Image (cartoon, rainbow, N blue to C red; front, side):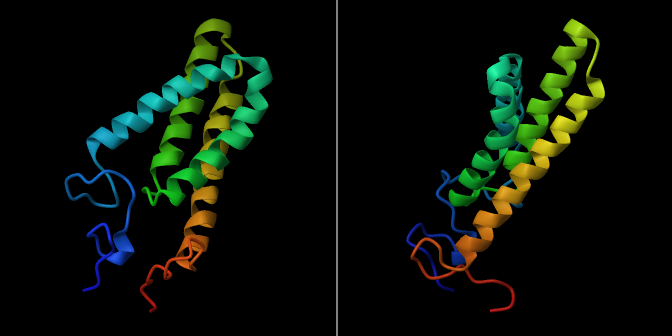
Length: 139
């Protein structure tokens, strides 16, 4: 079996730190990091000039960055869903309004992050980095 320069099989190359073998990159530690980071990012939603760029650009940049680092598909959507849920509960706690709107924000940002991850992942699978393309099940 061919190995990358990182010692991983080529279809499982990652620039993330080596750790215990995981299923789809899932560990409780990485889940906790995504959830806590999402709660912190969600607090930025209180800064009005940042809100629209935050919910439109943040997920796309994060999803693309995670895919570029060959991170797991679930990390960026979990982070942004957590951020949206933070916006939901903090706005409910302070203003008791916009709950459905912030639930929509949580879903929208998770979908944007997932879409960005897949766009970069597909481009990477076709040789975007200048390395040989990542093998797929069909090849």
